[in-house]
Length: 358
Image (cartoon, rainbow, N blue to C red):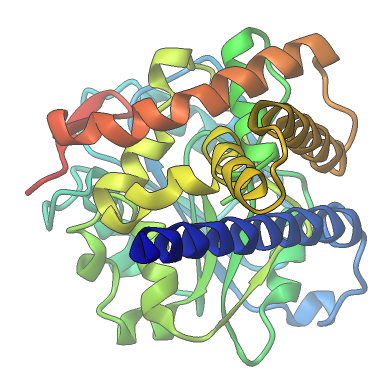
């Protein structure tokens, strides 16, 4: 009995530690969003002296927003950059989109590479290798096809690249789009999972093995940041995801992270429902509070905190009711996403699939 009491006491202490850690993260996230994101910062470098940037664009397939998204990169207000568009297959319809933009913007330093280079399981790295091998500038910007930018986005990112910074990350967010799946994605990225737009020093990346070193990973951006080792900074502008093809069935971010980072199998304890039960049990054991009452109050507080954080980037385009439904579905999907990978070794990536447990 003494051993059991000691174990329960330990679990209670863990519950209270979990409570303080999670709410500290909530408050830090809210404050960071309010103070840093979408704020105009003073230029740290003269415009004419900004470092040249090689933009690597992995393209596969065409969605309704592709041409508009890609065109925003041709209209960047930046003194010196190149656009290296990479497509795997000659018959990919993305080739025609690229050629159309090359013809429309002849004065932009842009090239198209077709064929890719098989160096690993990551299809995006395979696509990018020909462009990366000829990139001529000191900074490399890897930016997915579903991202759209403002004219000053690259200037903002380059200004964060100070002497001791090796990587500047654009926090993923989702543009306003039609449909409930878009609302679900916006709630996901705008609340507890703001985690694909990265500006890196090419020489530092080369020292880590270059792009080819990360071809064995699907979540290559995480491993790049880990391998670079320098300080990293966050852009004040978010990486605005604006894919034209999306559905609830394609909502698989947790599945991707768990397959590439098995330690995240413990992530459910940091999610609202599971954490609320653990903390509620701890409160019941220590203070004899009603577990279900505490559970409901804690979930409500979490729900409100997430909404405050979401509004930090501006008023959402959806109603409070849509937010409530999307928030509940997202929180309910955690356990399912955590268990799914063990029986599903493949994951859809753009228009194809890749095996993860290689």
